[in-house]
Length: 109
Length: 390
Image 1 (tube, each protein chain N blue to C red):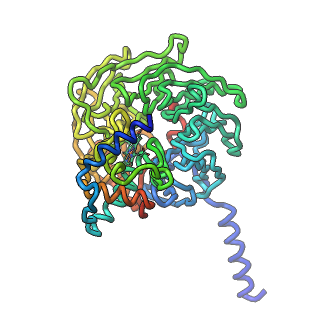
Image 2 (image 1 turned 180 degrees about the horizontal axis):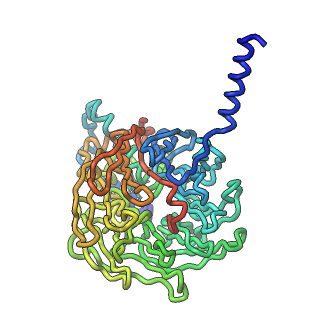
Image 3 (image 1 turned 30 degrees about the vertical axis):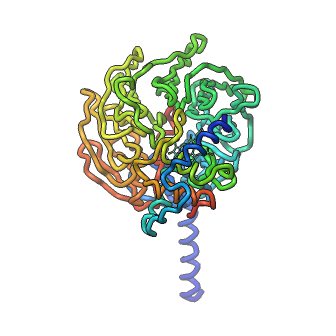
């Protein structure tokens, strides 16, 4: 199950707008907002420390198998039939990818 | 004796008298406000509408829950990181603290007040501890199929030293009887897809589990468990498309008022009213967002509702006589929780992004006080000590 999801996500991730090139990072003010947003609002399901809750751990060790684009796609589109909702209403694609990259390397405080 | 000596003796005596006679006080009007980020709880006095202390070192308190000893002196605070801390509200300090799992989501206290039970995501199951010492007593792993463990949600106490809870991954309701505390016995009932929270009615008779994976609510009559569970409100959201859910609604602290049960509709900007006599849908009340908490004022005259993103700065108040929103409030940024004073004349609301708690009069809606509290979330008053299912 995990394998097929992974393959599917990889395929879709290739179509994610910025796959391949690096979009501009959000400005510093917005970055601070995004850090708060992830810690508070994603933290409601993934834990304030992002170590897991109703949703799985988002610590780097738990995300090793996913490239940032695949994570960005999950965040942008959500996962149907699970509580993970799509966040495109709140986050641009560039912001989503920035968050995914930060998650991969250990999310800032 | 020199005058100075005499003065000193007098002074020391006065001090001793002062410390020996620390003013006695009850705990029935006290409570705690959870600070999400600092690992602290602010201790509050609802009569004075003021904070009187702060206790720190409680670990990760995002999504923390608290229950109270029946003498209302101690709060048991369940942290997200599996910490269980017994806070002495009168001495304003930690009485005891253990870390009981890696990933927890709240807890409950038994009818007789002797067992505190934590519900865990990882490893999925419930664990019971002695309420005095926090020594481990027993556990029930949520192994719903060989080798498969479920996250546990919706744990609530029920009469008969029982605890009812739901298995998010297992799709079941379990009722564990701790009459023999070291040897709990458990009965299992089908619930439905992905129960996300549960509640016990104030009389301790019914257990309801809200379902995330389907439109419906599972119901179990704890007086007649042999009749099994059944599903009510099937397809309640079929009239329009389900929206993304940015925050899981809560059923805890739920509302039974004017003969109806008031529940959040998952993925819809609505509160559902159920006729508590037959569990049929009585009304759907449009509100300004997706409800998170739907809470009745203790007298049942009003139901207060807060919302998920992006409407989490709003609060709607429903008149339970006519089932309409009677008041729309914007009490702050990111209203995470609310709690009524024991008989409901005031409500306390936590505004996370304003770092404050606001106290409102529930008749006039006038603000009565604001308390600075860093990143406040759950508010819990000791009046919960004497209510079933809290």
